[in-house]
Length: 364
Image (tube, rainbow, N blue to C red):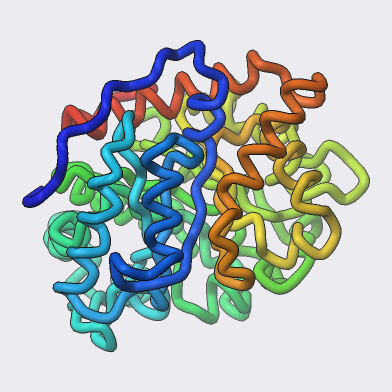
């Protein structure tokens, strides 16, 4: 990347603060390198308080502005390389859009239904264009593809927003595979979402509790099963979804339940051993019922490796430091084991090493 500084030496693996920092990803306020929110995010990347940032439409005004912003963040010289992330699915969920001077990409539903896009070869070409724009803009992680099956077309967050490739797992798998291959070739990490499956839900987990216990079907695991077996999953996002099969009890969402991540890790089930990301920890499904401390500690103890906070509501420049302190205190008093931190750090470091070496392909 032009103007990118050399990375600082990676801290020793035994440095607890450095390991904790890699587990934190936050959003921030601002669009210019002179904005205080941007400077705060860069400082936290530089000193290892956080390991990544996620950008939202409010951070993006134009291609030149965006490229300058991401270059500034990369130049924090953090090591390992920071994740610079975005949600770029196409359709109604694309942060780089026509409104801020970027290309338009069709929704997953339109890709799945349009014969011009629906073949793996055509989908690969389409998503190669998307991935190139992301890479040229300075991103190295995309929160996609959506591998939810469109089992409830009236679902307010998946079906109605056209975010699913379709109801047939074979279609979803083929198009998700093309999405991932295209991004890998551009050097972009992908995060398949939303495990164990948001496609049948009747509620929007952004707004409140999403109970899928009566609508969820076993077939919703098939994309994860097949893509993991093929070595096509870089990372997986756990949804704020409740189902007793994926819950530790008391109506606890999958995102805060070890049972869900054990299902993902199980060698006889999904057999995925890579990085697990949380969905935004500020979404209503968890924020309404659990304090920030409860969310962070429960998610990490459940097995989540990277905790994501959008920071869109509060725009708190110190949010990364606050989350870091919560985790460090919990390790200090035994509420989180150091081993759990070391396990997460090992997976994140391996993924970032693959990213830096442009070798994302391969099973975990």
